Structure formats: structure tokens, C-alpha cells
Image 1: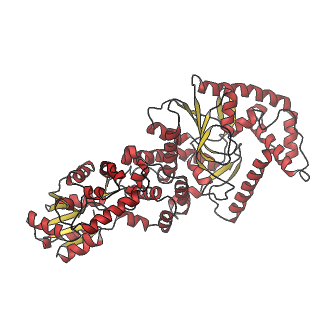
Image 2: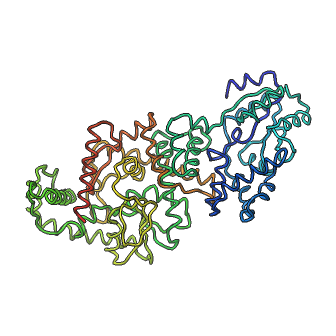
Image 3: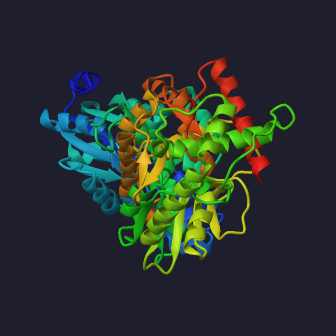
Length: 584
């Protein structure tokens, strides 16, 4: 309990509380952001600005508090039908503030009378219904300005409370956030005042990156993301249990997984079998299944690039390989070495290999010595893998694939090639156009050197599985000899995914059918914030490493920590870019 508040109550017979931004909060940085949300929900272009203007116009013309009907009478007639929608949205999105509700309970337990006072254009029926839904009951009286022709802002509502409740003004302690209506005015009337700062303002001031984040990009998405984050950090929503990894996933991965799952839900054919690509589709499938329980025809399918490379002829030809001279044909040399390593690594158990020679000539020689056996193994595993895909899709007239980031649509082409028919792809990010049927949450144009846009979001769109190194008897073979940091990632990612799922559940619990989908820039920039918090979250995300390439053998930090890491990242990104261009 707030000890300063307990001390402040001494000498007062009653305590009055402001409602909005004090006892309850809304999931927006500014109260007017709700109008942006309504504009988005109802496709009512221009509504937010006109709704604000109409309220300001009415307040200039009307003495005392205004009513919602007066505002909508002054609004463009084409938006008149949204009045009930505004009431419904306002009624459901409020969340109790445990700090001030605790203060209210303490005042009641002390035997003092408690009054709730609000300057608001909504009716007492609407507001009290909202308060009761939030578990706020037991107060002695509730006053809303619109029904009394008086306001806190002018002081008249405080005087009315004092007269009707029979408590002198100087015996009432008022708690609220508004500098005029909750502080300077009641103080001028002789009341006691316990100033309370808006929780979202405290949160915005807790890290210097939050206000910069809010000032750019989509206002509605960032307003909600920051407000939900404040609610999580202050224990207004969600469990207080959960370790660091759970909280990391909930706080910084949650917005990405929630929004992409929402995107998929809005774009998928309701009758299609939905395949979620491993590992990127792990948390997305979990959230989608909670979000769309009636769409239960889903499967988690292993369609990593390595299967396309090794089990088809699309990238790596059969037979012996010649190693070009590195000095005269460096990129072709590198391509052959990569292909050889993919194949030797994939069939290492069959070949009895503990390791692959570091020397390129030795690696190619080892491959060519076993070329016939490797071709036979490729044929055998290809048949087995193809049957796996056909079994997953059996009986489905329409099949759709959910994946993360793509440039060549490899997974989609792999499934289409096995099924012998087109499917539709859904992607978080596409790096190139394609004639395949697909849609995308975001199209990234050009090469982008920014790990905040690439490594960190892809880290949060992962799974607790280890990398796949092979295929046997209808199932993937996981690399149980992965480096220690990858073993650690696999150990903790279950908690990260649980946190991501809880985030989406909490957002949907607040907004219901009005559940928002955040824009791409807002969620990836927010996820990148995890690396710059300068606290336990930053240390956690900076401890992780990320594997590049189909074989997951080249590891580097998700976030470069020093010059050596940055140089390594640059080298790997450039190599990957050139390799992709060279394989086109």
C-alpha cells in the first residue's frame, strides 16, 4: 500500500477519487486515440479528427459538462451511427488500476466514506457498469458531470458532492491526475489533494526511447503497444508469474506474433488446410488456434530450405561435383563447397561422419567418393519426405502455407512440387515478388542492413526445436550436438512462446471483436527495443546467437555487441546477398 497515501488520509473523513486515468486506465496513450481506433475498426475515414473537432466545438458553446448526444449532433451526419459503437468500445476496454483501487479499499477499510467523481460525457449507467466489470465496487456515491450540470474543472461538482453527502469540503481528500480538475481546483476549494500521475506518463518517462518510438510511425499501433506494455509492467493485466524468458517473449515478441496471427486470420480461406511452417510458424499457430478456434484444420509442417536443397534437384544437382578454382571463379567455388557441405551434413549419420573436413578440396573429394551412395540416399529420403507432405495434406481440397520471411518462396515451391498443384502462401515479410499465389504482411524493398528489422523479429518467430540436420522414417532428425548457445535457446524458447501467447490472449481479452492488428514497422521497432533497454531484457537478447543458411552452421550474435561482431555480421550478410543473387 502507498504509505504516503495512508499518511495523507489522516485528518479527513472522506476520500474522493477521479475515475479515468486514476482508478481505471484505457489502452491508449491519449484518450482521443480511441477515435483513431474507431476509425480503423469501422473504416470511417476522417472520423477521428472530426470527432475531436465536434467535441471541442460543443465545449466552447455549452456551459458545464456536455453530453455524448450533443457531440454527435454536432458531428458529420455520416458518423451519427457510431455513437453506440463508441459507448460499447469505451465500456469494454477499461482496466482497473490495482494501485489506486488498493488505495480506495484502504480508505473504505479505514471507515472513511469514498466518492467517485468524473468529468465525463458518458452516462453514470455506462461508467458504473464499466467500474463493476473491473471489480470496483463498495464506494458510497458516484457523480458524473454530464448528469449533474456541474464539473470538477469548474469546482461546482465538488461543491455538489459536499452538499449532498453532508461532508465539508475541507474534510475530503481528493485523488486524481488532472492538474486543474483534480488538483488546483479542489485545492482552491480547501480540499485535501493527493496528486496522482497518469500511469502512462510515468511509463513514457521511464525510458528515453519510448517517447521517440511514439512520435514516429502509426500512432494507433504505438499508442496501444506502449499502453499494453505499461499495463503489463504495472501488473494491471497478465500473470505476475513467469521467468525472464516468459516476460521477454510476452513484452517484446507478443506484438509481432499477435499481429501476424491476426493478419493470417483475416486472410486465410476458412475452408483451407493451413500449414504452419516450422520453425517460424510455431507460436503463430498457437495464437491462431486460440484466435480462430473454429478453424481447426491446421498442421505444423517441416518445410525448411534444407529439404528443398537436398531432397529435390531444384538447387543441388545429382552426381559428382567439380570444384572451380577459387581465384578465377570465387563465387562458383563457394557455391560448390556449400552444396557439398549441405549434403555431407544431411547424410552424416548414414556416412558415419563425425565431422566434415574444413579443407574444401577434402570435402569435395569425400563427397565424390560417396556420390552414388548419396544419390541413392537422396532418392530414398525424397520419397519418404514426399509421402510425409502428402499425408499432411491428404483430403484437403485447398492448402495454404504460413511462413515468416521469404525471397524465393522455397517452402511454398517445395510443397507445390510434391502435391503437383498450387497452394497459397501467407508471409510475414517478402523480399521479392513472385508469380505464386500469396499475400504478405509486409513487402521489404531492397537490401536492408539492420539487425533490428531482421534478426530480432525472426528470433521471436522461432520454436523450442533444435536445428534439423536430416530426415529419417517420416520425421526430421534434430541436431542434438548443436552449440551450447543453441541448446540454451531451445531450452528457454518454450517460455518465450508461452509469453507471446499470453500477450495475444490479453489483448484480445481487452478489445474483444475490436482486437487491433499493429503495423509491421511498429512491431519490429518495438521488438528491437528489447536490445536497447539496458536491463535484464537487453542482456538476455544480446546473449542469443542466430544461425544463417539452410544448414544452420554459421552462427553470429542476434545483436552485435562489439566491432568484431559487427564485422562478422556485415561479412555474413554480404555473403548471403551475393549467394542469393548468384543462385538466381
